[in-house]
Amino acid sequence: MLVLDREERERLEEFARQIRIATLEELGHLGFGHIGGAMSIVDLLAVLYGKVMRYKPDDPRWEGRDWLVLSKGHAGPALYATLALKGFFPYEMLKTLNQGGTNLPSHADRNKTPGVDMTTGSLGQGMSTGLGVALGLKMDGRPNRVYIILGDGECQEGQIWEGVLFGGNAKLDNLIVFVDYNKQQLDGYVDNINPLGDLRAKWEQFGWFAQEVDGHDVGQIYEAICRAQAAEGQSSVIILHTIKGKGCTFAEGVELNHHMRFTKEQIEEAIAALKGAGRDAV
Amino acid sequence: MRFELDSTAMKDAYIDALIELAEQNPNIVVLDADLMNSNSTVKFMKRFPGRAINVGVQEANMLGVAAGLAAVGKIPFTHTFACFNARRALDQIYMSVAYAKLPVRIVGTDPGVTAAYNGGTHMPLEDVGFLRGIPTMTVIEPVDNEMLRGILPQVVEMDTPVYLRINRKQPVKVYKPGTEFQIGCGHVLCDGTDVTIIATGILVPEALEAAEILAGEGISARVVNIFTIKPMDEELVIRAAVETGAIVTAENHNVINGLGSAVAEVVVQHFPVPVERVGVQDLFGEVGSVEYLQQRFGLTSAAIVEKAKAVLARKNS
Image (cartoon, rainbow over all chains, first blue to last red; front, side):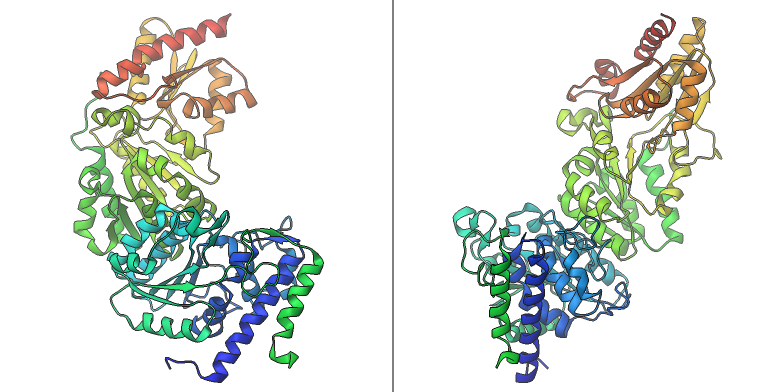
């Protein structure tokens, strides 16, 4: 099935809403965190963990699993919320984010969190490690797929473009790279700092099957993934046009929302707004 | 020099040994960054085309790809000149490899002055310092082909990252065939009672020559080929301090952060005795022949003799 039916679409939208609420609850315990870039990838996570990826929450290192490399490792809290909702670890563990001794550190860590496949945080590096995973799986003829999530600011790193050149030539059709193109980075708007230009044309020039979709439309994301998976003999990239801080009342539309401090009231208000947007509120 | 030059270059002894191991172990994969002909990894590619990757000139990506391969059970060996494999890709080694607990084997060729005609830009005199500061990293500098062949099977078996510092050229023969080696256990090459010379790499034969010169002057020098700079064989170093009361270190590296520093750390903590360090005295590399550069930077038996006498004077004062 290449198109989501209405029921499936609503299920994934609901999952995305739950991930957003869980992410806010998780960050709310701390009062600060990488809110903007966490909220912008939620709809993608909902599609991946809600429909596309193969995994076993009770066996996180299952050999048959698909791999996710969250190269923009600072969005870890959104991934943790997703994994908790899917039962990789107790929901209550989300309260331990960034506390001393926690298994949920600010940046994703494969050795700490059940379900996290790669250690990331120093930007640019997940591109290469993800390529290595895809290459290794392909060497052995294994059917597992690999998904890499890059940030747009991260695409200013030289290592990304080393990987884009290498990955284009390696023709890894078991790999899909996503660029969370939310147009904002820590210091402000990407276009005011070091613009990326026509990202799609750049990746195409490097030999990738490149698509651009609305990164908050679960249907568009799913359809693009299906098209990418059908593109045999070519590595795929999907550029997701997103909004940094999407769905969070105090973060969306704010220029400096990469890492924010927030009050308990702000969090409660944001969660209430999300709950009000759900079907259960109707 | 009383040592015979090996007819086989170290890069060839290395890759032949790795190919032999790879015949038995299908998970061994080789990566290189456009130096396959320089490093002889091209031989591996000919034998196992599906298990050798030339990433081109992209060291950072190579280390990351290797880490990803390790994550799915491969045993990756990365290759390029030591200056690029250790220095240029340092953050990738730190995070994608070591912090992520992904055992990549990093093979840096042309260490120190053996970079010779490539000059200062290519002369790694700081690589050991960089890498030994990373938790879980093992740092090894084998002296000859026999030792390299002896330790390579252990390197394959390790589940933590390893940095191998390898001279590409023909080494002298220090060990007889069949000698056994254990990573982390230094080798006493000749015993002595007055002073201990602890050396690595191309400074090992210089140390042995220095011991002969010192013997001619009535000074009994012990020579240790430590070869594993991290983890340091502390017991052997402490024994040298206790039994000889004076130590000279000798390395093809900056004296800051390298072998000399590592030995001094053990000595000051466990049994303080005078230590003198032979090595590059915090200078950048230069272009020239290996022989010229050894003279230029004082990486010679004569420099070791001089430091041995200086450390003995301190010991006896």
